[in-house]
Length: 192
Image (cartoon, rainbow, N blue to C red; front, top):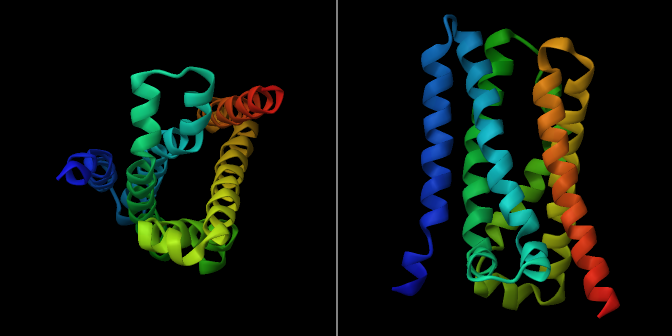
């Protein structure tokens, strides 16, 4: 029963993913524009959910509190919430590319991140942790850094364009801040 109560982050991810999909599809005046907006909005709601999972343990080490303890306790559910939002994002992105008539090779740069998301989501259970042993930690540690890198690069490349500069600056700053938190927590642990 307690585990069911802790699944609320997944519900947030489901509402955010499907809500942003609906918003994008509603606001577009043409089919390609609607899918482009849906892809954009689903990516943007996924970032803060991902960053919560990415920085959870670092926040606990740097600022222990009931809130940061709960964040770490529910990190699996935040990760699954992110996996849901990015599954919706992938679907919207696929539709955006195909309705524009573009080559599916445009999806290749994010393929490694999507594989990491899938592997991490499929192994997010106590049974998978036990079966994979030390490899579970390796998978999740490398996977989360791959996803972070793809997000960071995706937002950083937007800085060069005038119409996407603000989005690029904000997204890049959020990603770099989360990495700085992890580095600070690692240094604190190493000194102790």
